[in-house]
Length: 347
Image (cartoon, rainbow, N blue to C red):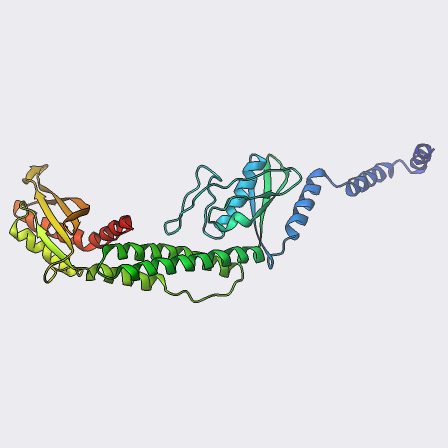
């Protein structure tokens, strides 16, 4: 009956009005029934609007598969804090001043969110990932971190880091300022302080209060350098080191604060400089040398530091002066860091 009435109404219309009526009816039907694509957009907008910026930190990820999109969302969330999520993508890079440890284990589900389960010393361990429908040929996912939860995680980590810094400094005090191992514990305190500073910055990003960080990394670094320079060293030279080069090396050591101890010292640096004979090639004069320093404690070897050096000059008479400069520059720029590295190995 409705179909007959509908046709009857059309038949009553003038022939010129019928196409316009049909076009308007078709437009009304399209307007009443939203496309699946539009429904997806509406659903995605509702999901994002559920997490206001004042309370949540969010990041979107896209990928060829649902799992790839979820992992990329986690990675992007981590990027907001200058951290990395291990195992998100094979091409992901790691931070200089911070180290990722362990793996992120992710559960995927069509109906439930994905939770990062394993702690890898990254804030994103507390994030949740919500999958979205396929958009064209690309999947989308939303990673969400509640700021209150993030602040709670970071506060706990900061408390633990402060305790570990205090423990490292306590070891330094226990060993005293005449032991190289004390420098190793100071270096460990600096590394922990670097992580602490990053966690504190993340806390501020999440709306937490800015706190005084004591001791600061700058204070600890200055203390470490002073500690190395204050250590008493007995400086000795191997037989292959010529007297002129001994003077060059002694002056370079003094420039960075390492001088011959007055009286007996527990630590000694045994220096050997092996210079090869100069040679000519392509119209230039070359010379190579090996600089070695053995660190000893109570006549017991503790480690060895070494560098391969070379100098080049247009005139043969310039070779030795340039080699002497290379020796001095190497000691002044690298020795302190090498001694700190040795100290860290002893702790």
